[in-house]
Image 1 (cartoon, rainbow, N blue to C red):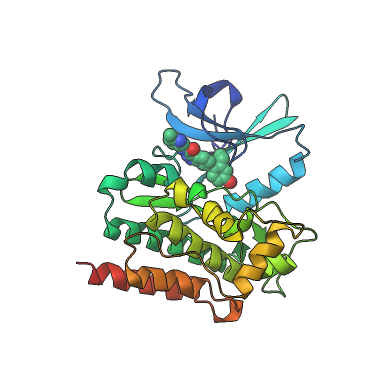
Image 2: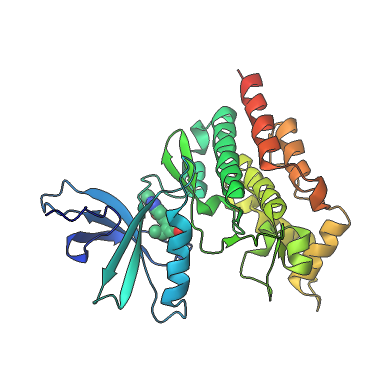
Length: 297
Ligand SMILES: CCc1cc(O)ccc1-c1ccc2c(C(=O)Nc3ccc(C)nc3)n[nH]c2c1
């Protein structure tokens, strides 16, 4: 047919369901094979169905699709297209399938043979992905090891832009009208105190991701557990975020992971500078991590 084939439109009849993927992080995500030839030679894709009932209406979904479709970076999960179904009453988001799953599961499973060098490589790739997002004025707001996906043994990509906001043209931060649903333990003080999100609050979260990585994503020492330990059981009255905010204001920070290289821990501490203006940028961080990779030879 002479109509130019739209590569981003997936016909529902050729989208063959294989198995469930998302563990709730990404909503309900399924592994499918797009197999127009019907001979199982089609490619594997990750598909997120619009949850018609979950209030996230078509408009929000279309905003996420619009936001994703303009991102082109080696360190960001590739948008592939959309699939309309039920006569356009519902739609699905089709993304590149990354076969090794979330970074937290991958690092824990392979903790006995992941070198510091490979962790630093993953860290620099996350920095570059975040640097790219910053050029698009995107604030991710949910940077965590669970939201990074593993493409292969030496490539990770940033995923799940469900909470991402685009900064307004005239402001360098995004203020949420009410406390969001980002997990508290990855949030910078200004997010806890004022719901203010920026590239600099993403830098704070990157520091937490470094901590997760160099803790080999061991759940027994994950950020949530370490913070709750510090707060102690006496969480009387004061809300958790208030407790956390007070601890951070009096300069408590997550302890260095076991056997963590000193310069990596000091990089985390730089990301956890209380004053967001004094935190390094993702381009500063990229350079520092690259230098560590050179030194690590
Ligand atoms: C479509 C939802 C979405 C929305 C968005 O805005 C950004 C990324 C994604 C997404 C979420 C998950 C995946 C996955 C995967 O989950 N892969 C895997 C592989 C192996 C195992 C064990 N588990 C898991 N691959 N590509 C994915 C893209």
